Length: 598
Image 1 (spheres, rainbow, N blue to C red):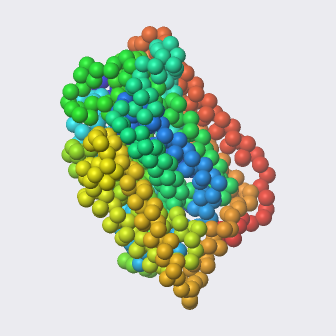
Image 2 (cartoon, one colour; image 1 turned 120 degrees about the vertical axis):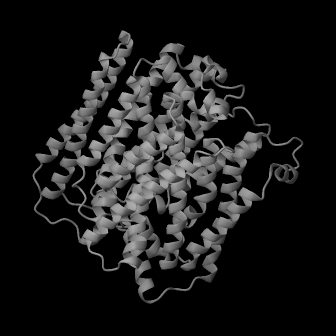
Image 3 (cartoon, rainbow, N blue to C red; image 1 turned 45 degrees about the horizontal axis):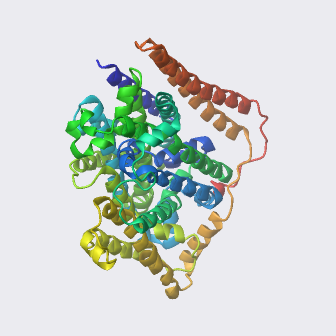
């Protein structure tokens, strides 16, 4: 068997073992969908970071880096700014909603009609995004192992489904932490090799960046690029700060841990671009002719295999399998979070309140696992359909889905924290207005129309129109039209009465009241258990990596595997030491917070 395929299979087995390790951690739907709200900041922060990362980062985005120059890095810095805003405001508010499913917060804020509209507007777009992530991974695997894209989609989807099904949110978040460590270490090592072989960072940038180093190729009108640049920051701000994506932080132990998780994600997203893109620009400078890559089967999507070309040509034997494991890590961490969230939304906002109101916790857990299976299969099926997508590159397709399909939902789910006096119907009505705006942008506006309206002397390039349509027009249209509509609903506001008044009051009381957990023997044991289990997982991963020195490689290649093993093992040892420190703390005899805090 090919050594790289063997490494990937071992990694799959490792992930399934993590899922099995946490099989008994979920005794309730709160445990299954948010870890009972007991997770420490470094676990929550890793899942927040990894949710924003996928194989798309190392396929479609790397391919985009060949023509877009430094501008592609803007997306990740915009994400970092969004996470910093999480730290300042939203992470705390998200945890303080005290919900299991994020749509439960929508139910309290906007009522039952909006609850259902948000549910069925959120879940399909999430399935679409997950299917695009799987496609990015499948393209990479196809280039590496010469296997069918559909086989990769099915295999990766089933592994994620098994892990999420068996271990719930505990397995999802634990695997996200493991995968964050692996992908960070592997890409860091790849960047060191690129710098070493190029003779420094500047030679990479001098050779790898295009004629326009910041803007890249394909822009004739600078002000269109400026508009795209601004809208990217606006889009990523909304994407990281909204009620729908609050599942990143509802699992945190308390408000303090939620905010620390956000700043961890911010730091990782700030540092990441300095590591990830240098190998891609190295390839652009050293292997500029894609026809020499030997990847003709990918056709027009050949640039999506840029990172693979670097690993194949410049890294030691066995690193392709390890890099593929990192790519699987990135995609699976995004997919498993989406899968767990979607199942939680359906159970808590459809099944429990409307289908089986009197369900016991045992029945809810059974229904949760059935729902996880259904959504997992749906994502796989959608991924297979998306594999036939020909008209867009993966990057542009993802941007189109996230802006035109998902963005209308984000506007009311963020603004509702600041604008209190809106009627219940403002939530679902804003989504309908946003859907109309998206439809016009997607199906009505053409390059010729834009050229005529702006009186442009030359036609728009393919890149200009693709980025203008997927980002600039989408964000601008939704901010001014969709967002403007939500603000205008204040003119129709009437103070709620009865139960609705109590629900809205509870929502705003909750989000303004910090979650504080006092130290008891129970909390000490839970914190220590998290650190101990993840420490052991990392030490096991370190041991597996150290065995790769037996692969026939030059000395420098063997040293790379030793270095990676030492880094991951050191983190594992630190976690084990921290768990012992926790176990030695004297517990306080006071009771934990009131039930409402959880």
